Image (cartoon, rainbow, N blue to C red):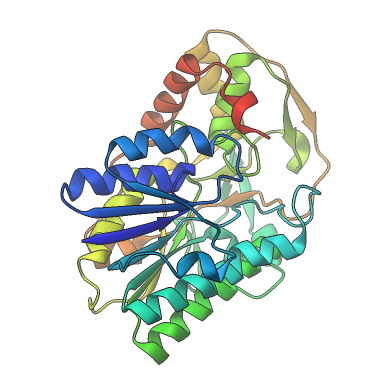
Length: 356
């Protein structure tokens, strides 16, 4: 097996490569990264020690693919993963589209020319914002829950948002760039017979995730709590009851291993992948966990003003993927929190290193 992972030294990419090395001792593993994200350089030496060939390159540049060796699969983990990308002043809208869509074009062209398969890591944020913000919710303890007694939109149940939920814009610039990448990948699969799998991922979390709230809320919250940095509950009354699910990238890697070994499997090419309802948590619940684990309280500012792109409840229903691939996450929410907290103790300066 020969595998190329783009965004190789990011949080998700580096975890995928470590798991692939465990599964395929003799595999040729190649990582491509432009090292633009603070903290990514820290993963280079560890991957090289595992025999991963790490190459400096940028998915936005078609010529960077020309000299790459032939592989069997390309895993796209190189996207800008922030729903605020292109509107937050950190990156331009053009940079976002170049990373998330033009990069997909370059990877698909590489796969077409070399008869390689393609795995796109997409996102839960391809689902339409207006119906997500209008999900009927009730309060249960310190979290929001779906109020099943009211009429629910198509594709929604108390178990989460399924693949049939609306993907009509507005999605955010980030979301629409990933949805366009999905459609493009499916067209290449049909037109050029490129094996393609598309995984719409929930919130990724684990040790070593880069510490920005728009890209790694679990890492940001736990590191900030331990360091007693300022924290805020934003929107939805400032209560911290907004809910997401959590998925460790090693669990994602185990699904990708199945997909790469079954390029012709008779199942849908696109599916949700998440920790599911059993991994769901609110910010308030995470705060309670932090107080108990770290042994100290921490004031959290409350700001009830809503912001564009924020949603109160988003859990992915990935029953289709679990059934099709006989797969389910093995790393629980509690295990993820414990792993991140242990890393925070070992790396007390991680936020300063990775949050730029």
